[in-house]
Image (cartoon, rainbow, N blue to C red; front, side):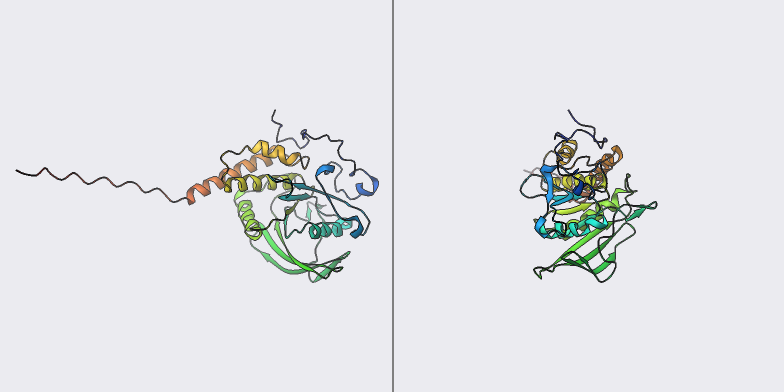
Amino acid sequence: MTKDPGSPHATDGTDPEERFQCPRPDNAKKNRYINALPYDHARVVINEYANMNNSDYINASTITDHDPRNPAYIATQGPLAETSADFWQMVWEQGCVVIVMLTRLVENDVVLCHRYWPEEGSELYHIYEVHLVSEHIWCDDYLVRSFYLKNLKTGETRTVTQFHFLTWPDGGVPNTTKALLEFRRKVNKSFRGRSCPIVVHCSDGVSRTGSYCLLDMVLNRMAKGAKEIDIAATLEHIRDQRSGAVATKAQFQMVLAAVAEEVQAILKALPQQQTPQPLPPPPPPAQH
């Protein structure tokens, strides 16, 4: 039976009791929302011995496509002030080089995400130093930031790129799918050839985050030549790993519309078949 993709609390095929870690008092304070929690079987486990609070918990879930050993995404909530160091620890330990941020920091006077990076220069998050290298505003819809992430324990530095989409309201959908599809192309161009997961977050880590992961997963399967794609079943697959992914019917319909738009763009880009030229008339019969 197909679950209603418009219901954020549809049954996920996994026992909801399988969340023993989230409600623990020391972990509960790290959750932005009480109804957006990771399953134990899919949660990202950070190294408690390297953690400033000696904890292995972060509100983040791995999402795989076809290979359970190599997650395609890490779906996570917008960091809180007290979990920003955990966020960078996760980015470091999972080897992530791309962050997709789908929320503004504040919307309608409500804080949706803590600014977990420096506005300029460098900032220290436990043993991780984050240096803002550049901030490039591509258009009204999104901007791109580049960071150097340094592990002060090992002295190693990596480059991490954050793609920040600005015009997707909390609980809603973007005004147009065109900007979101362009944004996704930018993300994937930067990510091409990497085997690490993409970190995707909004505020709750399920609604906009789940919608983006669903759209990207479906379009990636198309690009790899999949003959048949069941978008509702793909959403089921994601929801089995991150409960509540895609929060509203409108978000699911937006994903369908974006997929249709991308298919149209692919078809338009195909070389047009040449109209066959008419055969020349046969030569007249020889005169005897």
